[in-house]
Image 1 (tube, one colour):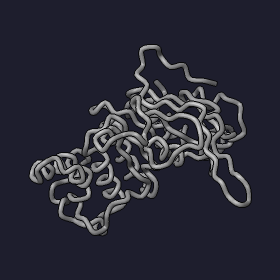
Image 2 (cartoon, one colour):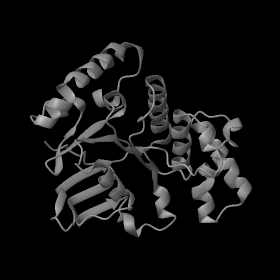
Image 3 (cartoon, one colour):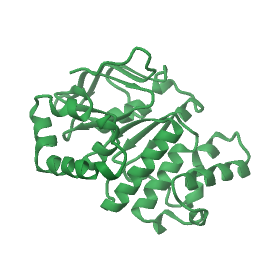
Image 4 (cartoon, helix red, strand yellow):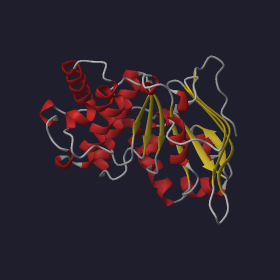
Length: 275
């Protein structure tokens, strides 16, 4: 099943005929084969798939940290590897464990991408970092703390502030709620939903958390058999006949997550994936 791109939609990411092959003395491992995917402005697209299907590899290729064996990836009309330092400001990345610099303070972690450009005075960079700190729900009093003094939820928020410091239109999220307790995960989802709406972000997210998946996604793309086998709303994806989809969405965990979603529907905004 192929998601029909509206004719007036702006294509933020285009992936065409992508192959990812890992070479080794024991033989080649093909992870992606003729994979196609289009991501349009303003959506929250979630990538799901079993272990070894190359979800994080695909995210890193969009970011330009890895290169496909063949095929084409374009981000905002450019190959990721060709983006200049300023062009890289078009993409923000939230890594699974935050990837904060342990020797830096919270404020210095957030300010790091701007300082690397060496184009702005330090007081302006500091002000911008403080704005982003408050944007993710943390107070200025947290600015001087070290990452070791932060909870898991706070680390995620600081890492998100750093990803947003250059106001990118595209945000990549690798397991944004991994390691968080349910209350913290719900709070982080609420934060992401608000920022997506207020900043007009396009979001590409990997998650194994079904609650997060159902709560935030406007579209889900399923990786299996070395390609995207289906993309669409939650209902579209669940209706697609494939063993992974049946096990992932219709097993015990999936059923419980959907029940919780329906039970909470009356007390919170309608999830993007159900619109």
